[in-house]
Structure formats: C-alpha cells, structure tokens
Length: 393
Ligand SMILES: Cc1cc2nc3c(=O)[nH]c(=O)nc-3n(C[C@H](O)[C@H](O)[C@H](O)COP(=O)(O)OP(=O)(O)OC[C@H]3O[C@@H](n4cnc5c(N)ncnc54)[C@H](O)[C@@H]3O)c2cc1C
Image (cartoon, rainbow, N blue to C red; front, side):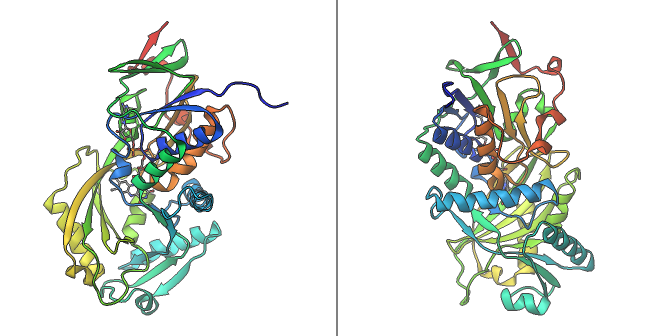
C-alpha cells in the first residue's frame, strides 16, 4: 500500500550549503519547504571558504568514511545533471617538510589505504616531476588522486534553484516555538511561522539556540586570492596540503590558533591560499600579520607564487566542536527538530550528504548513511538548561 500520509511542511533555518541541500532533497521528494536566512544564501561559512571535497584531509574513522560517500554523492549529482560543471575531480598532494611531517603523511597513507582509498607515495624527485617549481624545503609527498573540488556558494545556489526554493532573506529566526516537547515553528521579527518539522542549519549561529554555545567553538580562517597564474607552464595539478593541516584536523581539541597551509589552484587560474585556524574568534576581518605568515609559508613551499598578485583576502568562521565531529540528527528530546550544524572545516564536502540524510529524517525515514557518531545526543542535556526556546500553547 502506498504511504498516504501528506508530506510535512519543513522549515529550514539557514541557507548555507547544508540548508540548501536539505531543501533540495525535500523538494525532490515532494515536501513543502521554507528556507529562512538571517541575511542571504551563502552569507555564512559557505560563502567564505575553500571547496575541497577531500578525503585526503579527513581524520581517520567516521569523517573519512563519510567524506568518501560525500564525494561519490557529488559525482552522482553531476551525473544527474544537478551539479553540472560545479564539481570536478583532481588530486590532492599532501606534503612534508621534516621527518615528523613525513611520519604524519605516512600514517595518513596507512589510514587512507585501510579505507580502500588509492594513494601514491612520492619522494622529492617524483614529486618534483608532478609539481615542478616546489621549494627546497619539501621532502616528500602523498598523492591522493580521486579528491575533488566545488565552490560552496555555487553549489548552494544551484541546489536552491533546482529545488525551486527562494529563501526568505533578512529573516532571522529569534526563537524556536514549542508546544510541550514538540517544536512547532519559529519566531521571526515578522511574526511566527509554523511547520511540522524545523531544521537548524544556521552554521556558527546555531550556537545561539538550545545551549549550543556551550559546545560549539568558532574557528576563524583567513584566505588569500591571487590573480591568474602566468607561469609559462601549467599551474598546480591539484592542491598542495601541508602535513600540519592534517595534524590540526587530527587534534580538534587543540585550543591554540595556528596557520596550516593549503595552496589551492582554482579553475580560473587563480590560487586560493589559506588558512589560519583562530580558535574562539568570531569576527570576519583579515589582518596583515596572519596574511603575511600564510604568504611567506606559501612562497617557501611553492616559490613561483611570488610572481602573483594578491587581489583579495577574506575570512570565514568554521563551526567546530571539541570532538571534531558535526552535530547532525534528531534532537534527543524535542520532537519535530533536526540539527545539522557544526560542520567543522568540512561542510562543503559533507553538505549534500548531510542534507540528504536530514531530508529523509524530516520525512520520517531512516538516513541512507550511518550518522550515529554525529548525534546531537552526545552534547544536548535535558531541556531544563535551554534558554533559547519559548514555550507556547
Ligand atoms: C576558511 C575556511 C575554509 C574552509 N574550507 C573548506 C573546504 O575546503 N572544504 C570543506 O568541505 N569545507 C570547508 N570549510 C567549511 C565550510 O565552509 C562549512 O563547514 C560550511 O560552509 C557550513 O555550511 P552550513 O550550511 O552549515 O553553514 P553556513 O554556510 O554558515 O550557513 C548558515 C546560514 O545560516 C544563516 N543564519 C544564521 N543565523 C540565523 C538565524 N537566526 N536565522 C536564520 N538564518 C540564520 C546565516 O546567515 C547563513 O547563511 C571552510 C570554512 C572556512 C571558514
């Protein structure tokens, strides 16, 4: 017998890549979906990030597994003519500049191999053949051939367009509206909006709800954009990713701020060079000291960059947690509420996959992937501690 229940009306808070992907999958399934954004689509981290759809960079375990599935989903969305021209496959080159870093990428190779991910170890000579122009400090590298890239705001725009969803801009959600233990809508400056299911996908601003300020940690990242390359030979075949970047991902609890270098060749011929990891910092300013540190390191690793001009710097805020995992799943106590936030530095990669799972939950189905490790229940305490919701009815 076909399921005769009517589709729920789902209200999504946030039009970043996660909210857009959720809206896309809901609308494709036939549900009614309303997306609200305090500002505009991609106004948060999605519009201020790099776009590595990368398995090479992930922590071993659940994040590496999910990244592999997420990358496959990107390829599927291209095949389905949804993300045509927006996602492409390219290799990532992890590199090491001292013995400790060699050990870090060797360990990453073991973990990637364990997941069945193809890799190729490159000594300096082999690496130079593939990446001519590398600086003298680079000792060895690891090629991960099947990684990919997509620009977050382009994906967000496309997913919303394919869903035929026009987000309500400049519509901040002030509070969740409850009836007993059920979330039944949201309060906005323009009034109350009711829905069957509410999805919290507000990036770092999710911390203003449900006591999440106690578990979410902002980490600012500054990035630099150059003009187009004119080297006389092909620009980089893929991003150069430092072993220290891996190390920073592997130790999410490290509170100190740092710079971990990635030099990313964009399809425009420009380079995107980043980034800092500034723990606890919420402003989106760039500063000369950090930009200089990043550029100095970048030119040491890849001296031809010194010929480029810097045309822009910008910063975004990663929403992170102490255990380095996103917060994705049904709220443990409040019916009708799904959380999809704290995507770390991985939300461009994982966004479509998370959106697909959230849509299934909103429709009362199980998710296709095992996302149990991301459950909000690992952080959220009984409702008594919650100060951001209003009990009504
Ligand atoms: C420097 C940097 C580099 C990165 N590089 C990569 C990378 O290479 N690969 C990768 O996979 N990821 C990367 N990321 C991470 C990625 O950008 C994020 O994980 C992802 O964009 C998060 O998407 P989101 O939809 O969860 O949140 P966001 O994109 O932050 O969207 C949240 C939206 O919610 C809206 N909002 C906030 N509060 C409210 C409210 N009260 N009511 C209504 N709307 C609200 C905001 O305006 C915003 O539009 C990087 C991040 C940074 C900062």
